[in-house]
Image (cartoon, rainbow, N blue to C red; front, side, top):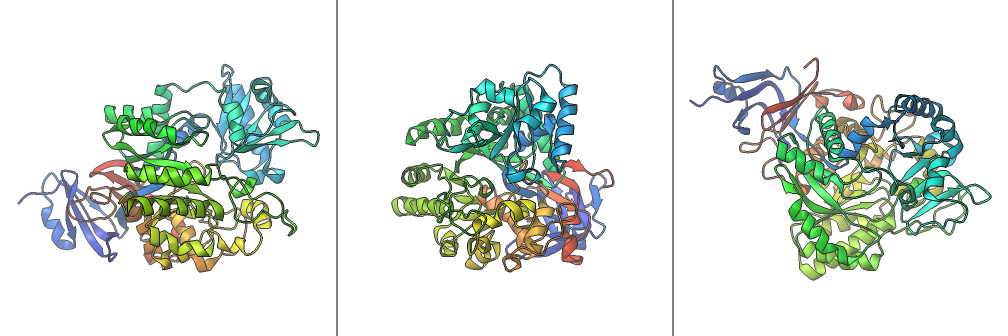
Length: 551
């Protein structure tokens, strides 16, 4: 008898297969699953077999994050990381300590602040000046759609009262027109184009830091949602290639190549060349990222109707479509015909519709192809567009953690969306009932990469334990989805989007042993404790890539 290299037994196994079947033991040989079943699997235990007693805890397929930024997240952890803090005094204290500890840095770099920590979501330069002095400072917020800069950075970039807003962004201003210290969307580029380029060694270190962190949450594969020159961090692609060549890339990664919204169709040959170059080991850049709009909190999400003014009156601002819909409707069919997947960012209902319209045009021109286009974020979706996801074969890429009441939603979103749009947010239940494919991701470092915290919110429509920012009722509870569906979205659903479903995403014989062992069976406990679930061990091809101290 051939003995297994690894046997995990003694607890429930969520296979995530089509019938969500359960088993109680899994055997692994040569990195692949060779048996899934019950006590009979223990017959494969030999003298050299590693045996893991599940102890009644749930074994699941390795989670796959369908929208994440691990290199940038890792770089945030190496810089002045504000993500663990929650208000302006804490941010300024942390920045001051970082400045003192890094006297030789030309620029003070970091990020991760929350808009809800500042009046109107817009921090001011003079507060940053007080702790950074004359060195320029650039701090993107947690969602990456705005940046807090000091006066030295504004001077270095030549931004003053006469500087016009770029077409895809806005400079926050004082009453006299002078810049106040917050740059939205494309206005960030006025400063971040001046930042020193991070060397490849540093970017690779950031990737490995981010990878370790994601493995600690049971994540074994992901789609990097921007591979290309964007923001304040540089292109992650070369870091992936180096890690793949050196054998340190333990995750499976699909890269989404950045669509330059300042250019047009002429960039397609460049993207084709980069697709061929950015391929090695467990990394392949086969997707295209198109950011169609901004975010609702700074009024750049693209809406079918104008935003309100917070008092129930319409304004003349309906957000920004970063890519002209006419260009989008020409680009997507060309990308689709060339075999690219398109990974859209769409927050507002107009942006969602423009993305769906572009895919409809691709289907009309090319027929139905297996490129598996997906729309991430889907915050506001007009009810008329819900069935179009199924009809067009577009996957709904959920960032479930956001579907909750919290200060940013209460103070900076709901008053300006108004009704009925406020009730159209994160319609996961309607999308499920319509027959859409659901995938899931975190957008880390925008928010926590913990899949169980996101799954908790998808099920409860309330924040997970440890993620609460106040006492709130459930947010649109009719849009909740069940635990099994949410787990499947974060495993099999994302694997399908990543074209990895032949070898991953479910626990089935013949597939890679990409697995995560949880510290409990969340199906056996109350729903309001789902988010307290931790990951104890993570395996890629049967090799342990993470173990908690108490595993």
